Image (spheres, rainbow, N blue to C red):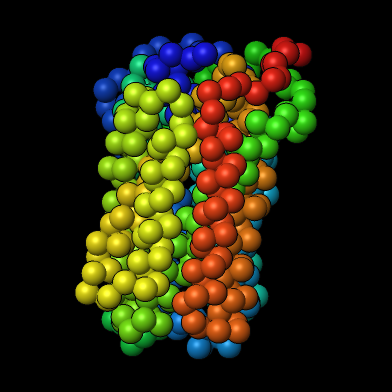
Length: 420
């Protein structure tokens, strides 16, 4: 089993991409170049959530303006999440052809184009742009942590924390500022959504110097057989997908749910922003506490309980107490996601198995996760009552708890990596 430092490195990189390259052989980078790389990583990470969290606060405006039905709105919130699972596995192939740095630059352009396309060409542009943005996020999300491990190997744990903070900050900013921008433009949602292409363009500019770097070529590949037949691998995959389903329901629908309870669109966006910001300390604190446990079952149970309590509070608690429930929800989701990531290392005998388990868990898991926002859209197409959503949240949470207790046991998947 891995020691703690090894686990931190896996969480930083090999959980997300099967990186078979040997350590880089280039000379140590200057302090200025390192700081520029760090800034680039933060800005790229900052762009991996706004395309998802910016839509939810103005979804009502979009639906009213375009004639979007609740079912189609559910499909719209589902589409980018599904694209994470569809296109993420392509990232290693693109990186081998172009290099990780160039791939990220190209995909950032696609991400900015997708964000802008959502505001043009009516429903076609809205859906096509969402798919393009989701595909870009999926590819970058796989490659970026690999660069973190390669270039910040001795500080992978710290840099993973910085990367996580950038993700949450980007999501929180988009959730909190999209409605004020729309109101500034006379309740026009188009410039409010288009605004989030600007951080992507800024990230491209700062990232551009990284295209000149050279790194050692890959030395070979590792093959892992039997993962799809391993029960524990499926338990980890299902847990990853189910907890992600709850997360993307919140990203896609929380403001709309709160608007139904009497909050304004701005208040709903700010509530989502607050909940997302609380995920930052939780994603750092929970793994530290979990390290003291014999297995991952206690943190899974505690954080999952916080998530379902927070979701039910959003549905039923008095509106003057929603800030507290939003914070509880954010704490639970931040801790739950970091625990789910840690399972990919804890359940794997080596880093190569961890990489392939991650590909399975995140590829299949995100496809499963995309069904959650779609189900909410279908429910809201028939009723805006709270109880059907409460039933859905409880069913997903119960399923996540069941597979989480199985995945959280101190065991390893029964597969091995073979060099080819």
